[in-house]
Image 1: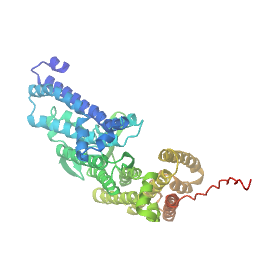
Image 2: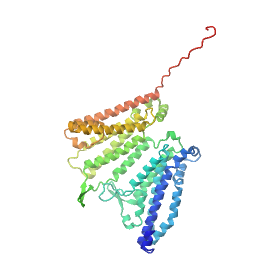
Image 3: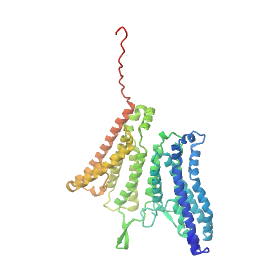
Image 4: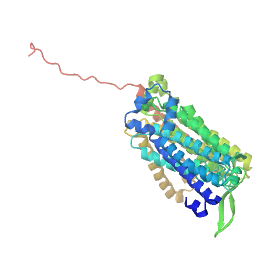
Length: 479
């Protein structure tokens, strides 16, 4: 409003500033305010013990999901509607294009629907006392996706993803029309990319909501194993696709305050960065697929002895291992196609790095699954704490031994912690050592699979009940 009156009511600059203010306020109210309402929609019903009444109604899961998605943030939609006359007036005063105005609000509403669907899904999975943590995670997610990462000199070619991207549509109309994303090197207009991504993410989140909304909260499962694996593959395709494969530019190089240019990312650096991103995605997949004691009991009741066999003891390693291997092979092939690596980059060492990542994550996921079957109050939380303490202590010990043991410290470290994963620097002359380390990692993973199988057998073998002999009262004749 200050800009509008400062520049004068007939000035386009003041009207553009007024529209930007109104649209920004609408975005904050609908995205953040509506998202927090969605985060509390199902969780609050559970705390008030009214959620079961909704589950047993004749409404379908999809109808209940749509009611939560659009009913919880209803007040935020009403406030946005109240601000619409101001936004329309400012857009008309600044002589904005109608099509650009429509584009901005398409991004706002469809983007907020995708974020709200994620919030409703998160609300279903909340436990008691965790709402504040999830709200903080939601705000971090909004902030992370609202940053601009798609510049020409950037390694990522997806522009701003959140609905805040709509703020720059109308005031920067000519520039916005020439905003492109690059997917596997192919230029795509930013608006269709945003709308397609919003639609796909909304469908994925609604799938998780409708599959669980009318079920008992104790048996919630966000996705089936196959669905979760496909969703992880989809996220990994986005990470690989929006990488800047065409321009080999990286971090800026400054001499004093003068920009001298941009450093070139080497194939090994590209592989490690993309491999770490893929490992994170599939590690989260593995954590989501972990089974607790109640779920294992249901499996034993349905499958019998087959629920405690060797194949069952590897759960959820096949999905994690297969996903990392697929992602690693795709990364190596994309580097070979787009970057034409130099002689010092070896495909054999790159594949060995993929194998090491797969071994580390498989071992850790099997450890977490074994710990999650133990009879403790919070087994998964304890497992994560033990894992963090182990990594921190092992890191300090290996750092202290590095000065005395040399390459043997590298071998010991590779067996214990996933650090210094630059296998290419250790490849020459150490092929046998690296293969031996990889075999050791495999043995560690199989050891935790064995421990998990022992736990699974406990659910099948009933506990031995020793009858308690009560003393017999003597009869009158015996007395």
